Image (cartoon, rainbow, N blue to C red; front, top):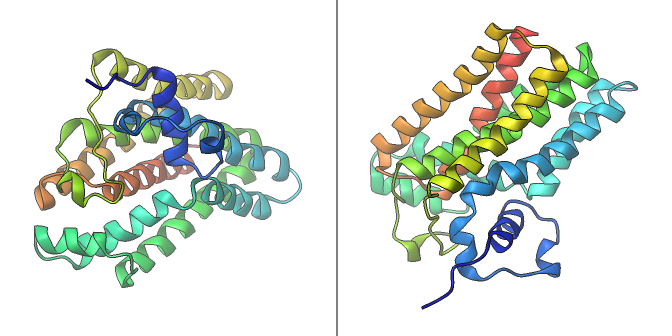
Length: 261
């Protein structure tokens, strides 16, 4: 019987899967480790968020527009536009598909359609507007919001995998791999990874109770709505759904923060 991958292999697999940084050159985890990466998504978010937050922190005092663009571009480069690709396929599939089979077929098609283009344009413009607004008020505040939003959104997006089955057969998946649901200890660790940056945000910004509740409640409701919608349409999740849920949940955090602060 194949030995279960250790925690180091699973964490390393998560960084290889969700970024384009050359972690694989240092160590290549066993294939089975990629089945257990969901509970480490927020940990990867610490890295991708830190890179975007650093761009805002260091550049915004001189030029807010360039800082905003740099923060977005850097994360796209680090992740290889993995999440954006998922969002585009999600918009194409759910926008143009009239049945479960049609939605799944469209999402698997590598070509981008009208819904995908419009979805990406609207997403990038809204994200840029939110980051620009926050950075204009305070580069520190904007950086802390980024540091909080990415891991927290990945924590919520992981619920898609925890709550519903995979919509395709394993051999039909793009990565030829189906995520394993986290057991209770791993699930607790997932929550800790997502909530620690939120604690840092509260400590450093002095956010009030109402602000914190809204920053938690709004993205949680968005995530719940998206999960319900996805399950109703295709009776399960796909990798594209994961990427779309993450980006839309994260965007809801930025929109909420922009109105509250």
